[in-house]
Image 1 (cartoon, rainbow, N blue to C red):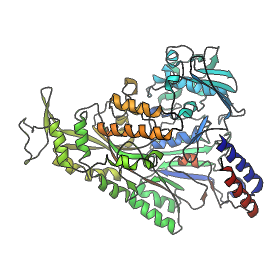
Image 2: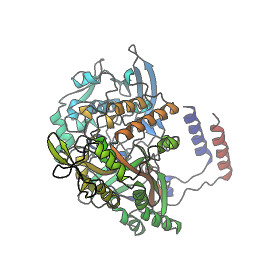
Image 3: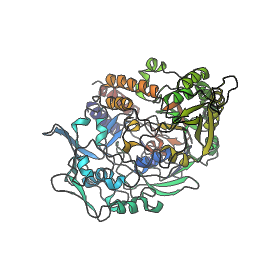
Length: 627
């Protein structure tokens, strides 16, 4: 808190001493539209992460939903959003549970002008924790760390959610979920409009907890949220973020957004100056030409090495600008651990020894990526402290070791049930429940991606030499995700994909063994109690105890490698390339383009006119850091 106050004092001093052009004066071009190109197709789910973690959809949700109670700084630290939170008080109740009383600032509103008060934040929690919401087919994971969650699921008021008045609500965190390394994120609530999602309903609190009064049914939510593709999930017209939804065309994968004139500002109080944003999918190989030709203004998260090399040279020549940052995620092959033959850990490990990870990394990233040996990305702060420990899990290309693992697992027969002949090769078989099963795996890959071709080139022959048949099927990206998330009965053993982790790194739901978690939370189908408990132990670390967290994180990585639910391939440096007059654009490992664009503007750089004032500010900054 002392650091926050010091920085606020510096900010005040800066505003008083330095003469800087206003945002409006900085705009020197007529257009105030920013066209953003992304290399992941938009999935079309724009309301909560409960319908998947498509990275383009995540960016859109970040763009249009806002006024969260908790935000994060450029370095990834979580802070209270002081644009929203007027006051936070903490106490312990008679049961030993942690009670947080949150007072919000007056004057907040949705983009349609509807006022936002404490009821909107309570409604957000009540909605997402309700059985009516779970019934829509979303991942049924509620906020079970809040006291009274199970009773609320049974129709009682939510005891741990209270509305004290129009500006004040409470969240009571069950002591069983504490300590938690990311405790502040338990208080992160984004408001959602009850007048759109549950018309004719209201949040009530009669003293025993909050509840939704009125015709709040599954049928109502089916109409307002799904609505045959016209509901809030797909077309959220009323939101509280910096920008508002205008349109999305799934055929062209183009989405349009307009500045929200009612937006109160991000956690620094900054409001956007760019009026319109168009976001569209573009194949990575076309991205640079699109910026050069003026068709796009920004292309985001480029990872292909050859494209990076060309873009870097264009930036050196002054034709475009670039920004690079470490990735907080990784590229991987995920297994369907609930299906045979990939249900066997030996089969999964054998496949891991049939990939030339170094060649994949070099051919695709061109040296802008590194192999990873677990469930992490190189941009995460834990990695810098753990390089030597992680190195012991390095994956080696070794088809002979793969054969040993397969033999130990019983894959010792040929297609007619006779002993497998290593000299003649072929596909291995195994007797399972009296049936001769072929070691043939279906591998789902996204169509039109260079990465899939590079990976196939550096795996298929090695797998075949070990006696494994890999059958590749190219799918549209959204169809691939449906199988990966188990939204349909999946028929594939392997999936080529990538992910970026949330700032609060919490793999507990991802590897939870409970039935309710299978699908969009636990995507691999791995049900290993030890791994799940290690993930729980990791997040159950006291706030700011970094050393303990890292040691538990390493224990989780060790078990993850034993179970091999995925083959980690690489993590890399991302590059954004953009027009030269886009100023103050600072996306990084912790801040997506959708967050960074609020601070950005198109025009000439702002100039500090008063040199003496600048020196005074520099001196004040030095003093403020002495704490």
